[in-house]
Length: 631
Image 1 (spheres, rainbow, N blue to C red):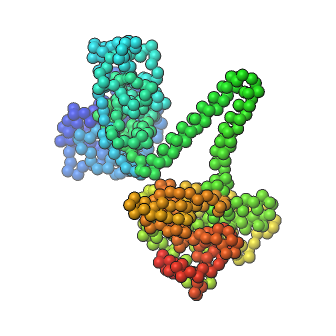
Image 2 (image 1 turned 90 degrees about the horizontal axis):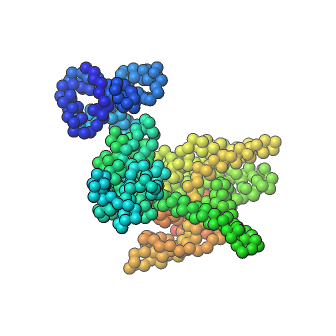
Image 3 (image 1 turned 135 degrees about the vertical axis):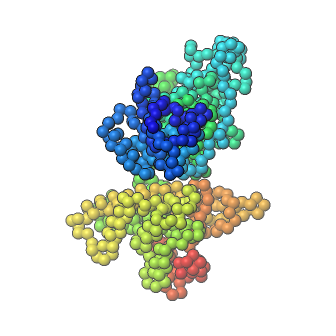
């Protein structure tokens, strides 16, 4: 049997529609639901219809297939896709799919509800942190019934206690509420119906997604919009107590996406409070919340600078004399110009590396740039390869320290351990790459929290373009070590290609600018307050001479004199003995060292910045290396 009905009968969760489907389900299995517009005569062309194909009820229930004819279709393509769907037992095609499982009769069969792509995206929302429903985070205060307002409350804007009545058209897609106009209605509304600062107001009536591919039209009420009350064509959501501003901002952003409309189902056309409160919404975790706060602060800072610039421009002809105006514009403009120039430099990779990358990498990068500018291709080529190795070495040392702290054993450690045990040669380019390649593919590391620094390190060689650049640099390094040197004629091109690969490698490690290398110089533990007062040096940028700064930490096991990785939440991760910071006995400069060899009776450390080596005879270093499994 086949029936042709308005789509609402099969999409709606309303009791009458659910009862209809339940009655049919007692005797019939639904085989195919085919949606399309402009099919029903005497209806508006945009009205959706459903052609439903049924067969007598069978114990072995056949798979349900749902198909939607797109607007302005390519008839041949649609027909072929439909034929393919009829032959499928599962999966999704261009215009239709096979439903996973058998929906209950009370569940409306709107196209998006069981679409595998939408279900996957719904499940993926948890990747932001967690998933709630709007009901968990918001309340739905009452709105004004317009009939009652006209009968009992209507007044003029000049009357005492006049409150603006807000309609759907006054809520803009730009997130703003339009200013009152001559058409604005006013009423003396009881306090329970009035809006408050922070309320979200949403247009109830929305066109279908097939007509306008947007999400809900949402605005947040500000003090400048009050006093106001929402009419019945507006849905109001009031944040529950304890909901942070960044969470409200994140939810508002989500509501404006087409995905939110799709997850709301056919009820999204009339966005009532009942429909919206059951909508799943993502909630940001702590790291994402902080990032959103930082972006909002940056946006406000740019607005403040724009306002300041406009003020200076507008004041050109307001001073008493032209000389005063000229002086004011030049002085005020200089500060604004310097801000813009400083901000523009952040888009330059070299500036970011020199100023915000950890000292060992920033130092090597600065040296490479200096040699390249001096026009010495042979020295520049060697410096590029050295910088690539130090970048991999530093990042691999972080990975080793963090993996050990997380209780994850890395197989690449075995090769490093074997080399150290010989006492003759230490780990090199290939060993550091092996660590990072293992980190990128480790299944155990995938289970770490999203904010763990190892998740950033896992991305370094996960990108194919970066991995290919690393391999080419590794091949060049091997050629240099085995006297397969580049011919002087080919050297300029080789230098250009090597530096391009180094740039790709550094781009893949941009996250290092957010993870500070710090040297703790003093720790004072307060047993009563349960906090540690810390003095430290942040070794970021291309110079080791930096000011001493202070912070507090709840950790009581911090070491004076050791290097730590500081995450964006100011958590500290011990790097000893993988990385050790001290003055170099050879050049007397502060340097970062890693273990290079372990000859009998001592440990040879090697500087990341200069390549200088020295023998560390302190017994604590040997025991620390044994403790972390490197010996």
